[in-house]
Image (cartoon, rainbow, N blue to C red; front, side, top):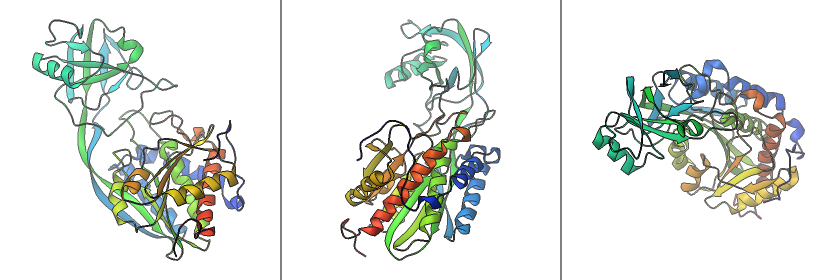
Length: 396
């Protein structure tokens, strides 16, 4: 990997003059628009986003297919949760949030607060350090009203939203902002209308040709979805990655030597389900480049490789040197892992997600220079694969 250097950079790879920052920015703004309601898998907004993306790929000349698949275990709020503490309503995602193993509480459930050292937990909300197996078992056996656990916030004071996690438990559990959790005393009244559903995911696939090095560009388009009364635009995660994949595909589709496919994946936020469904269908030897976040580069792009990825890593490393984009090894827990697990050479590339899974994840926080740097890195990597197939161990 190239050494990290301070500050964001702009790629200068040959041919990048063809890349349009305006086009990528417009894609981010479109996908973050209100009508897509946060693009959660199985929602009307998510389906509308899939149709819009299919149209974009068709405009680029791809043969397009929509691939539907079932997604189980998706966490969904029926309504905004509430927590009233000593007669003072607290703010959802600022002061408290759902804990994904909670049982559903549809009607207000009140009770006095007690420390976990209390002799009796019956009918009380217990302030605990963690909802581990033993704690939940005691709460259940003693008839506790529920458990309150601490949870941190991001730099803007939000608790990020998640929609995938362990199965629903028997006890109501609520996450409370860490500093507030440390001071809890008195009584609370809680509603937690969180349930689990099965949804239908829809990934969007585009094929541009069959001659040359097989390359699959991937990015998930789904988000965690809006809250009942709160917008979560999902601009960085991952409208930005989708914008990069589309722009790189637009340019590469006109270049010889690459058999290009694009997969705009659904249900990544529900456990990388779209890529798990798709990976077994991808031809062996296909190079997979997944872009998950291209909003704020910072010191370096994070790169995670899996499968027989040495040739792909060599091409990526050379691309980093050509473009001036610094790279570092880092965890990229995204769709690339599903492709790698299927035995494909795969890399995940991430360049930052400001406002990650909160209402603060807005289009204005997606840096145009980072979009350009990410597109340049992807283009240079693919061109390197095409340019030096023999050196990279590729057979045509």
